[in-house]
Amino acid sequence: MERKRRIFINASTVLLGGGVSVAINIINSLNNDFNNIETLVVVPDTNEYQSLFKGLENIIYIPLKKLKRHNRPYTDFVLINRLINNFNPHIVFSLGNLPTPTKYYQINLFDNPFTSAKRLNNLHLTYKEKLIHQFRNIAFLRRVKYVDKFVVQTHIQQELLLQKIKCKKDIEVLPNASISVSETEEINFTPDKSRKYLLAFSYYYPHKNLEKLIDVARLFKQKNKNYSIILTITNNQDKRAKKMLECIKRENLSEYIFSIGKVNASQIADLYSKIDAMILPTLMESFSSTYSDSMKYEKPIFTSDRDFAHEVCGESANYFDPHNAQSIYNCIELYYSLDVSSREAKVEEGKNRVANFLSWSDNLKKILKENYNG
Image: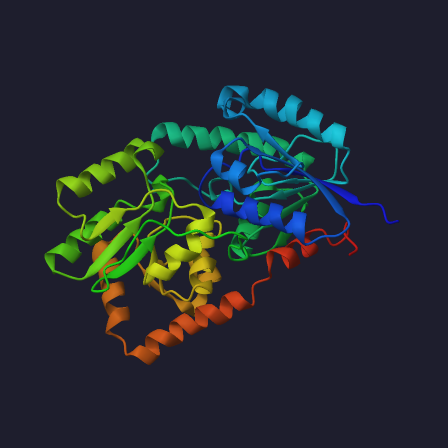
C-alpha cells in the first residue's frame, strides 16, 4: 500500500477578505480531490471555518487571542512548530503572508501586495498602518530563508517579489481559480428589477478606495440614474467603514449606495445571481478573486486601470481612473450605452478567460508536482 504524503496547512492567520475563500478552496480541494495525501489544517477559530469544516477531524482551531500581535511570536515559533513537528509532514503549505518558521520543506502562498510594493504612498494608509506594514515586511524578509517555493498569483507579483527578496527562490505563478463551495445558501437581498446593481464585494481596507464610490453615488443621485452600488462592509470592520455608512445615511444616498453586510462563501453564488455587475476602485491588489468570480458568473467588470487588473481581466473589464469619480461614472455609462451584442461580447470574453484558469485541484497538482504522484 502506497504511503500517504502528509501536508500541514498553516492558515492560522487567514481571517479576512478574499484570503478566506482562497484558504477554504485549497483546504477543500486537498481534502476531497487527492487520494494519497493526508492533511492537518490549522485555521483561526471563527464561525465561518467552524461551520464549513464541521465534523472534520483534521482541523485544528487557533483561538483568536493567540493571533493578536503581541502573541504572534509564541504562536508562530512555538505553538505552530509543535503541531508541525508532531505531524512530521512532507510539506508545510503556509497560506498566511508570513512564512512559517520551520525546518520542513515549505511552500508559501504569497499574496500581500504591501510587501512587494515599491512604495506605500497614495493608498489612504494612516501613519500607524504604514508602520505596521513596514514591520511586517521586515518580518517577512527575515523569514524568507524558511521558504523553498513561493506561489504568487500574477507575473507582476512574481517580478516584484524577486526584486524584494533579492535572492534566488523558486517562484511559481498560479492565478486564482474562481470560488468553489459544496453548499449554497440564499442571501437576504431582493433586487428591484427597475435598477442595476453594481457589487463592490470587499472587506473594508483603505487601499480598496471604497470611499470614492460615495462620490459616484452622489453623481447617480444628481443625474437621477437607476444604478445602485452594493457594499459588503460593516461598522465593526474599521472606524472608516463606520464613517462611510454614516455618511450614506446622512446624505440620503441609500437608494444609490448601501451595504448588505458580510457575505459568507456559501452565499456568493446567490448574490451574483441577483446583481448586474461588479465594481472595484482598488488601488492595489495581488489578484482579487472577485475578478475571477465575476467572470465565472458572467457579470461585467468595472475596475481600476492598473496593471494587476489588466493581467487578470484583459479585455473583459471596463477600466477607469480610481481617483476620479467622474471617470468611474463615465465608464459605467459608456458600457451601458453600448449595444447588447457589444456588452455581451465583453462578458463572453471574461467567461472564456476564466474557463482557461486552472481549477483549484489542477493548481495544487502543479504546486505539488514534485511531491505528489496521483
